[in-house]
Amino acid sequence: MSSFEGALIREQGQTFAVVIVKHHHTSSTSAANAAREAFQPHFPGVPVVLASQDARGTFRYHGRPDLAKFLAGLHPSQIPWKKYNY
Image 1 (tube, rainbow, N blue to C red):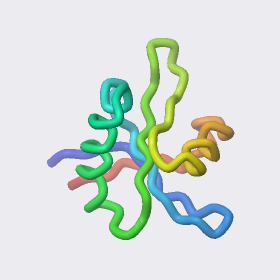
Image 2 (tube, rainbow, N blue to C red; image 1 turned 180 degrees about the vertical axis):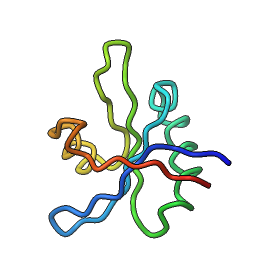
Image 3 (cartoon, rainbow, N blue to C red; image 1 turned 180 degrees about the horizontal axis):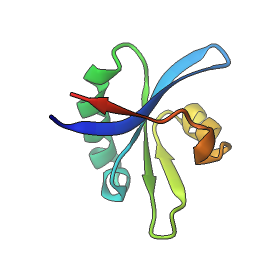
């Protein structure tokens, strides 16, 4: 069985998902789009934002600009992470 860390967030009338991925998945638009498409079946009907950490541990978000900006304003501990098995 495989798993990933992510969260389903409902905030300000929006529902969206955030998924932790390796940094190289957010380093280019094409890599990020491919990763988002891979996770989309786990979160049908909601936008998926990717989260990665750089070498210093700083989170970087890739996805819809309004959602990425919202997440960037949070401390990662404020995100309700959970392990998803598939």
